Length: 251
Length: 121
Image (cartoon, rainbow over all chains, first blue to last red; front, top):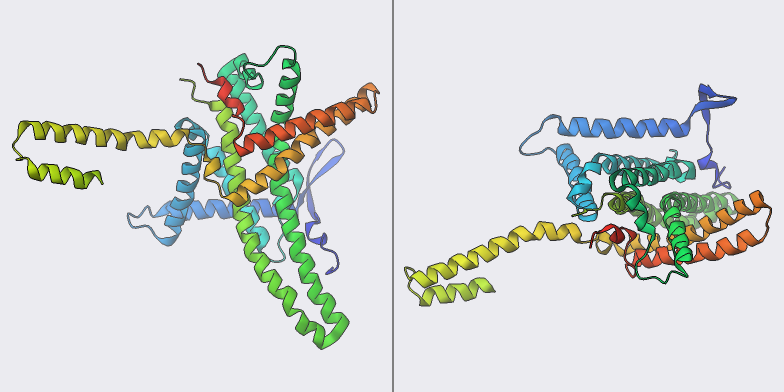
């Protein structure tokens, strides 16, 4: 197992839940960790806000901090009007952040390292932007793709490139999160594998030499903690930037 | 600072002077106006500048790849459906590359966002 850094991403089916056609929908370890994240977030916010003390407890100020942080992000990126999407962005941010942090604990499963999960989240954001933009601006929304002051001869080409650029958003949105989590966890596993490899190949000298990769893991772990937070933040802030397209203060 | 200057002038003029009082009122009005304007200005500031350089770096690197992937994917699908291989892939990869470059320039803030076009003039 030490030699196989991909093993940690294996999906394990626990029990079948439902059938869609011939496809079996099973409760997997991925679903288990998502459920755990939801439970943790809910408990954190309910317990954190239960007392409503004027002088906040540690948990309460953490809950308030998470609210303030996301609210500031939404306001500064999508404007005050963007606050109607605050619940959406807050949910996404907390969900991704909690999943990333759970994944840092050894022997756990990192849900966000699977592109199908991040893609589903990104497509949800993309569809929200598209549908709300159409609802809000109607056909005028497609002006998004038409730059001003471009000669009519090359306008179709430019519009097509703009459409491609718009469509590529959910891909960059999902790939960024998934690739970061995947690469980070593989790197950690590979360095951990070095320790085992050196220890079993060279005996005592190998175990002492294993201190080097172990030190590397400690450093990488700090980096991964930063990445776990940063990627959740980037995911949320890009959601806001995309939502800003749909909301846009039309005064 | 302005506060120091104001203190000096207040010291020179007697406080019951009508002109000095109205001048002070004016200054107060200005200061209240600037204090109130601040949060609205914040609305317009794109947070691109605020996100850390590390986060921006990650963003740039995926933007280009995403454009090329979408172009390549579309081209490949068209090739399969219309049987025009390899022309769809060639054309759409190029277009996708252009879209990717556009993405990167948007992320860098060189080109204005698409949403700017929805603003009524």
